[in-house]
Image (tube, one colour):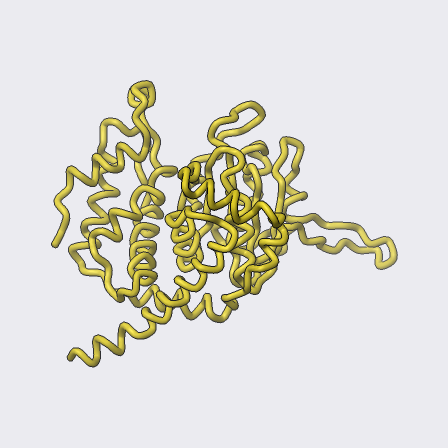
Length: 325
């Protein structure tokens, strides 16, 4: 029996070793931010889109670039602005006078890793262009459907402080992001390391030192591996209870969707896998709850005025529930 369990955990150990290798590679450029790096990798393993939020200059864009750098796939970047149109994102039909016919010219969203800088700078009309491609990995233009290449991930950044010239993202779009990753300032020690490491090199020179470690085939294999991680029925019920509490909490104006419960299930499995386990424990769920839920719930006006954050409320919900053992 022990031999069978060992054999089952061997592929997960392989993934754990690969994650360690990726962390080391990213660490060449980004000092600290270990939780952010893990969430980026979990998002990749769960085939999820990621929203990175933080003040300017805390390496949001750099983190997205690094994730694309370690994967041997195509990368594109869009800078969202108020005058950006849907056609600038997904592409448009262009008339060819020589052939007397229209042909589809693909937009920058046709890539594998798509970085959208300052996503909240564009109005709802442009945001709507992302709805179909984020959910179904396809774009429909003039009645024709164009499928994205595998893998396809949207990494979006936004600034939580500056509100002038920004637009609130629609709830339906926020729900399509697997995680909302909050990037904070580095510690004093990390700041010193950053200054020491980068005093003699530019950011581009540091990026050139990063090695590609993942192919699309490896990503597919690791994603299948994550799906095979086992989870006890009591833990599935625990996830359902957490989500249900957000829907019945008087402090919340909007609770989490079923897409949120599925996201919490998938990410908990991925969290277990990158730690080298082929089974989920309650701590995996508890750690994944804030990034999965913080952008999917909406506090009541009274609680917002009291200064309570979404993370505070998520923690209070978790503390009120009995943890299965």
